[in-house]
Image 1 (cartoon, helix red, strand yellow):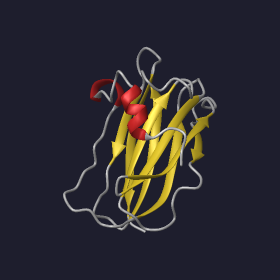
Image 2: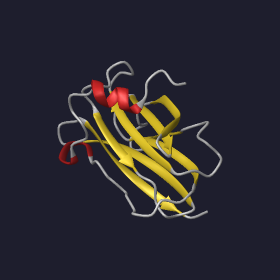
Image 3: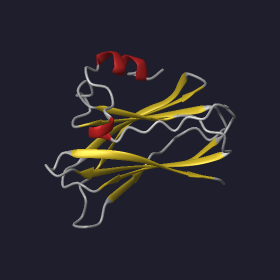
Image 4: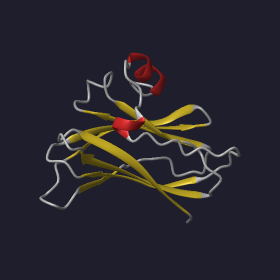
Length: 146
């Protein structure tokens, strides 16, 4: 259905999410229950355009997979892009993020995952910020509730 599955992208990858460099967060709960994805937003605090691959799986089946370009920050204000066309129906969702410097160059970049939780509604925000050397790093923030 989609040109690149998460498993294919990971198989291509030589570097998988590194906690010290990428801020990898695993938000796992033992119980899985259906939830609605109310929002996925991407914030770019860097001076460069960032390309983010967002993949959504429902019970292990990919239901969304697209790149979103997020323009550079405007001074001290981050640029924000909301991911469009995410599933509206409740599901057992896992959300994966890949920060790629170019859409075709995902093998050497970093993955983060936000696994299913026991909350009925969820919003995610991916913040991309420069580290001390100016390299992009990211963190995932989740809001729960409807």
